[in-house]
Length: 112
Image 1: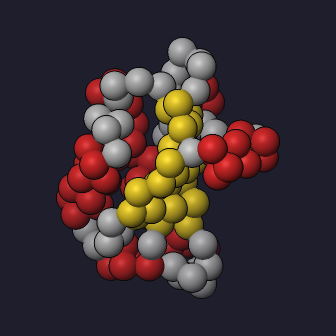
Image 2: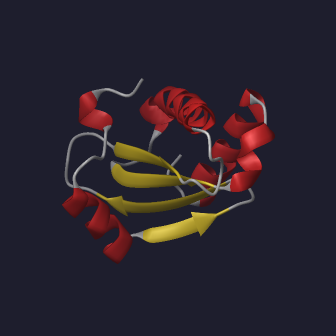
């Protein structure tokens, strides 16, 4: 579970990341990110209905991704606002595959 200070929640924050942020994609994830002027990174995980119609499956993926991100938080180079979009191929992947995919896209984006 991410701490409250590490959650990106406000609509205005989402809009600023979408408007002025950079983006990167791989087979499992799409991320949008932008530097923030805060003392900590903030992250949001988004899973659309296109991934799964079942809320239980979408919530399971969100919990797994948040758990992986909480392990990576101390290793972030700078403080970013990050939106992680989950793509449909993640549905049937294991935890270690998700971890490798997220690590790959964070390194590609120079977040880690």
